[in-house]
Length: 321
Ligand code: A3D
Image 1 (cartoon, rainbow, N blue to C red):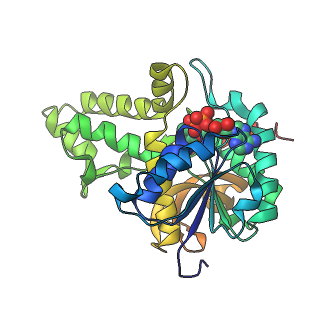
Image 2: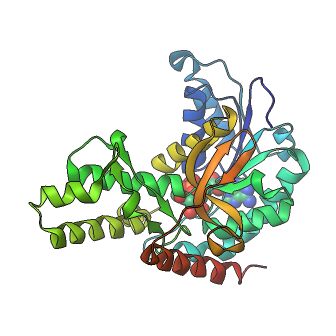
């Protein structure tokens, strides 16, 4: 349990996600920030730049850029955004070899200098990298989790909002499973302040259920491939604004003990019929990390999709050192 007082948030990897995350974390006054990277000058430069935003954005926080893991000392939360990103045509799984080594180095640093911290892993392939981070640190499973489901759910909600012409703030959407192309948007749970999205789609298309289903299938597929869509457009990196916002949702839930229900990569010990793997599931996130995994009964179709997604995670985890 995190004690009251100013939180210390360490961000490992000061690239696109790390930098924007540090900036928003300070703007939201979440705590002191340590920005780490192996590249000399990058975390220091970004820290100096963000520090100069303090007066206009009205925050009195310390932000330190460093290449020394010693500066992580006493961090409450560590977010791992270190690692290579996809290029057009690559899958997240193609990053496993290079990012495995990075996660090993990073985990050793965290274990040594921030042994009581809560870790949110963001590096891809997500579920495999969370698995490795927990193994290398040896931290309790509830203190090591992965961010993917919040982002995938936000993407699903965004596409639904565009289709319906309704504010995204009123859309509830849930995406579960592994963070890959076989992730599982749960159509049955998608609603606009309680009103099922499917019902609204059928109304929009004047009772044509077949067309409404086709439209929803399109939204599901776009969600599953949304990361790749950004990679293809950017050409030289992957999404970073929306991942940073999604990470902050998790960081706030821990720091402020919000006990929010969100999709996160958590270690399963029999829930949904899965033993010993990190997969995206509904979790209660609070001051003790993943405080609870919330189970529900899946339909046959949902379970088949979920099992397929879990099988993909298992395959990849089977190749890890
Ligand atoms: P990028 O802008 O390239 O930044 C990565 C940073 O990691 C760079 O500054 C590197 O110098 C640094 N780095 C490399 N090796 C190490 C090391 N050993 N120790 C510390 N720092 C190191 O990438 P990004 O910020 O856009 O993305 C970071 C990671 O997040 C990638 O693996 C992405 O695939 C992943 N990502 C995940 C999601 C999810 O939803 C899970 C979304 C978007 C990106």
